[in-house]
Amino acid sequence: MFFVLLNRGLVLVTSAVFAAAMIPSAFSQTQGEPVIMQLQDEYVYGRHRGPKLGYIEPEVFEPLSDPLYRAGYKNYRPVGVTGEQMKMNAMDRTKDLGSILACADGWFWPFSRTARDNEPAGIEVEILNSIAKKHDLNIDMMWVNMSTRFGYGAPGGAFDLSINRGLCDIVLGLTVTGSDDHQLDPSQVIYTKPFMSTGFVLVTQGAAKGLTSLDDVKKLDVKIGLPAYSPMSDYADEHQIPHETFFQNFRVIDAMVEGKVDAAMIWSGAISQAKMNRPEGEFQMVEGYVPIPEMRWDSAWVLKKTETEFKKFIDEAFEEMLESGEIKRIVERYGMPFYPPTQ
Image 1 (spheres, rainbow, N blue to C red):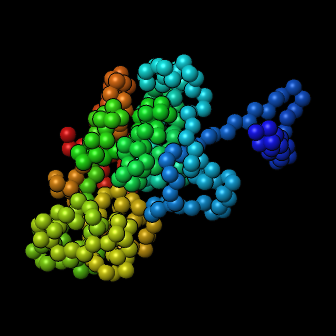
Image 2 (image 1 turned 45 degrees about the vertical axis):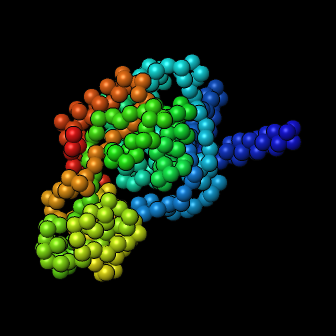
Image 3 (image 1 turned 180 degrees about the vertical axis):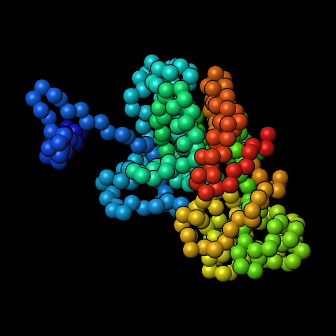
């Protein structure tokens, strides 16, 4: 143990000396004027997974300085939160800290991601930041992997690694489908009011450009691309809509770029992903398309059932931002269609 601690000490001393040598002269310490250096920590909870569609790798990848690489396996309490603050309710803790503690999936583009310099943070992070600024607050983001349906990556597992441990007071990035509600009860968390909705939308190109609805698809017997094992593929099977399935939304997008299909139903969030990652694609979402009710779901955040004051704070902020059109403007700035909540 002594050897380990000694080596850690050597590393810290060496790093400090190196950092001091790298400080530009313009920022060098003058007599009587101490230099205060502050670092912005990033936290990622849950099993690290590599970047997927919608993530842009940095121009130079250096594992020892990349925040995703460094923080991918760490489960720490937020730095700077005292034991006394941990005992407070969420609203009092937020006021005392001057900051909202939030967890989100670091790879859930366009809603959230661990953004680097000059990269957008994501729709929901922007919405939270707007709420915070209106009350002279900051936000502290911690990252949770919610990519898989079961285990630590599932919502229930992500809650265990985040809000249940007191690492954050609110978790972003939830879709209210009803199928995952059983994971809420063990965690004793509830949804906020919804702030928007998402769904499957029709995109077309080439010979399929005249299509405006699924009725047209079925009537003209046009084969459309769908993500496999999705609610949309189940719907197409049930309603005898001609289709071909591909694994995940980005494979459907690839199939359109490659000309394998000229029409597709993809998740509305994938529109933003496609524009970023497949700029050569000529397909477009059908203008004014609104997802059918069966293929449309509300988006919300979750917090502890006991945090009634904090829930009221967030719910009222959503209401104001929906009424003013601010959420719509944020969503559409990411190249994604905005749909108001269904409820």
